[in-house]
Length: 243
Ligand code: ADP
Ligand code: MG
Image: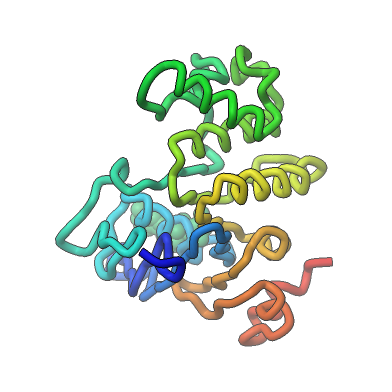
């Protein structure tokens, strides 16, 4: 595997519900250490695309590769836990009956001391080490979010899939949490596919934006290029409320 092998690549993914293609021939790649944003309005097929990559839904057509190896086509399918993928979804809450430490340790295997060291390393990284023995209900929304990030990253997934992870937070916190999340993701070296309907979030976080509409990717490129040279009027309009 070379540096030019995408960590994650999907080719020609199509998913139909009742004969309608809600994901329609979507292809994209995420390079190691990069954040790719799947950006588009509500209902355009973003979450369906992520669920297929995670392995909790199945495409009707197309293939998925992780580090150049096939993990799923219409015949062969690696189960979700075998894909080296971490998930962070808005409604993917912490386990309420487990402490912060046990939440972060949840997906970890191996000797106890090594698990504990990894938990402490990650909690330090998200600046939550002092809350290690607390329970989720004792934390603010932003603090829970940071623990959820630590939990998702603990098993060292090569790929992180994030579906509108910041939409439950109030505006005041959001920019700080976005910036902190980005720096933790970069330190951990994960390839990130971030779903959002907010152009501002994509501009702030992405190395690459894939603009999606009606199940299709209509434009793909660096944030600056997409912002400055939108493919059509609808794309321009979508970016127009960023200040
Ligand atoms: P987004 O995340 O961009 O808001 P989704 O991927 O959730 O969009 O949904 C895309 C479209 O697919 C929507 O019209 C939605 O109603 C439809 N859809 C999603 N899941 C199902 C399902 N299980 N059965 C039927 N339609 C679905
Ligand atoms: Mg969605």
